[in-house]
Image 1 (spheres, rainbow, N blue to C red):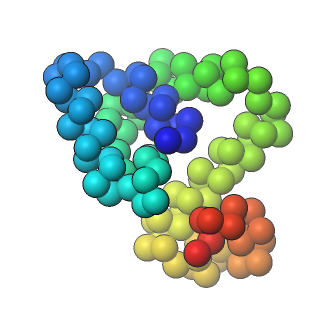
Image 2: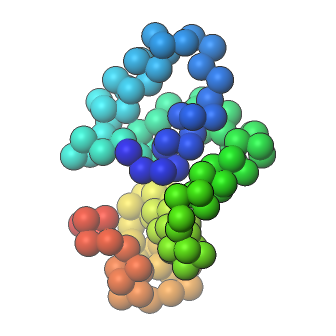
Length: 118
């Protein structure tokens, strides 16, 4: 799983304890592509809970920083996350996403890792 997912899971209160965690992981694996859990595979209640909690978001930023990422690496990761969100919003249409972002399609493909451009 990627760091964004880890931050969301770590900052959720888990009122259902271990059973709820098991159900969430099973849910994620059901919808995961190539066995990778991403933000898109998480139940929406976890994402909403995370987004409504500024302290959790700050904690996630601190976690990224503590892993020794340079500013450039951190910004690159956030850029990729934003690009993926825009593409998702455009229904997976990369040409529309590039237009919405006001960049060329070639630039969009260059900014995404190879496994995410297919």
